[in-house]
Every structure is written in structure tokens, then in C-alpha cells.
Image 1 (cartoon, one colour):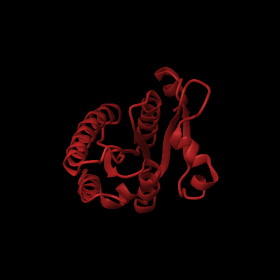
Image 2 (cartoon, one colour; image 1 turned 90 degrees about the horizontal axis):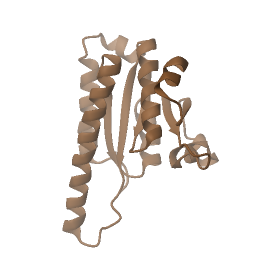
Image 3 (cartoon, rainbow, N blue to C red; image 1 turned 180 degrees about the vertical axis):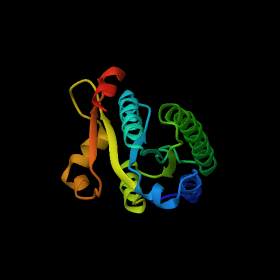
Image 4 (tube, rainbow, N blue to C red; image 1 turned 135 degrees about the horizontal axis):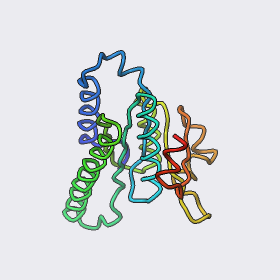
Length: 184
């Protein structure tokens, strides 16, 4: 599956409408710094989210969340594949609702929410190309001293870094909330 699904367009359109209707003039929304966090199940994503929320709060910016539904590996039967895709979509929506509530609690504003289908790195680069309002990508690095994580590895490789149009902030995944708060 390549590119964004038709459902993704609805999610992005809703995010844009929410941004424009947030009670601020459109020009003010355009000038806000937007801190993008890529959502996954890792502990380091929580660290990146905390950092992005704190930076958004201190700079009167906003947080944006990207969840990428990666293609199901089990696609031997079309019906089973469709059920798996629908379940993944519902899980993504539930996860984003929970995180959006957390962002609101920390920043006082709702995040822009982007749900896409495809390969995580490719969808991230595509979103950055399509959304000029995003000004900073915030990623957490994996704890444990080895590989910093697949997305960080890709983006710091020659293939990934030449495709970015925004700065990347790497937040060490082992930082406590107090340490993040002190840094941000």
C-alpha cells in the first residue's frame, strides 16, 4: 500500500478545520510553531510527546501527532486482510483520542491529528512535504544503548536526512518527566 488512504485525507482535513476554527485568526495559526510527534507504542515516544507538549506550551505553539498504520503482513485472504486493516484503523483512532486528550491536558489546545497508511518513514516524509505548518519533528531515542530506533536510524542515514525540510529534535528516551521539564 503506498501513499495515504482516502480515510487519511478526512483526518488531515479535520485537523486543518480544527486548527482554523480554534478561535484564532488564520494568520496566527499559520505562524505557530508546530511540533510533530510520531506515535508508536514505545516508551521513548512518551518522552518525545512530553518534550513537544512542554515546548508548545512555552512557545505558544501546537503539537501534531502522526500515527502510521503499517501494512498487515498477513494478506493471504482478502477478507482477513480487510478485517485486520479495519481493526488497525480503529486502534489507531482510539490511541489518537487518548493522546489528544493528554496533549490538551498539558498544553490547553488540541493537537492536529494525522492518521495515515503505509510505511512509517515514507508517510512521515510525505506529511512534512504536504504540511508547511510543521516546523519541528520531535523524536525520542530508544533506551538501552544500542540502536536509537528505526525512524531515527532512517532519518539520520543519507537516504533520510536529505529528504527532511524541518529540524529534528532527538530527546533521550531515558529522561524523566522532571528532566524533560527542566530542559524544555
